[in-house]
Length: 362
Image (cartoon, helix red, strand yellow):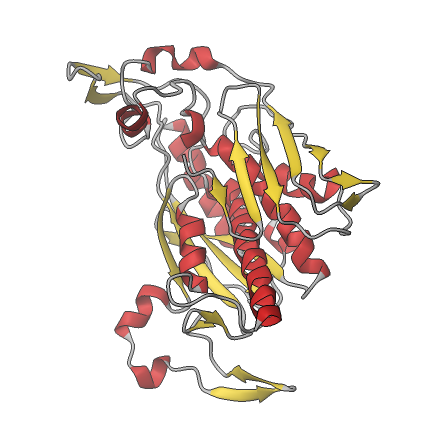
């Protein structure tokens, strides 16, 4: 199973939804960096379940422990082990689903690939796996902040068919994003989004949405053409998050409807470096960062596990009606915001280390 992400800054996640705990091993973090649990806990608190009425009711504190790789609050350059215990498991909620693969979930595909699966909670396909990503991403973000000062901010830009206004990409910050439980930068639209999600929850259904993200102060030159272009690595990272179904960057699919004369980003002098007047490229050209803000969007499908009765079949092909139990998000986007930020941090940190290594050897 491919549970490791990155080349120089590497994160390996472990654990299932209803085992004793989940976590990550982070290898490649430079030595001498200040690091303690509080640097990681902030993002875990934003991701954890049970934080609002638009999230799953599973009650987890998600308290992280750094088990190795630091001494006296400094990184040693050795592997950093991080562990978060599972405290509110209810594997019994999944007893009725042992023999019935949930529609649009990973039950069937995991069974076909491995010949066995964790039937309680989806195992490694559960969003609980993303805790390890948050842990690794928080460390990557600390490294980026203490170095080039990279700022990464994500927000909910769409729920179902309701879109929010695009915020000022140069000033949007996490404090503004967290002013409402939806994590939408447009407070007026956020209230309507909350109603949509609560209605879906009351109807035992689910809805999808879009998370947008901006990465500021990313130095130019990051990305490894031709197959490890920066946007390709970001796409790989984002589409590895559970429930994702789409990724676009800069002008995205809308750019296909534009003419080159409108889409091109003319260069201008910004201080001592060149910049661009517009940013349809989304901060990346030729697979390499150009110093402008990196802007992208990630589409999340409606969660597959719903409480409504669904006509389906069991693993033997016999007709069955599945009425899923358990505690599940009616919409994942609010809790996905820190996950998107974490995966972006992992990509940029890894690319930064590769860039430094290439410049050194060349």
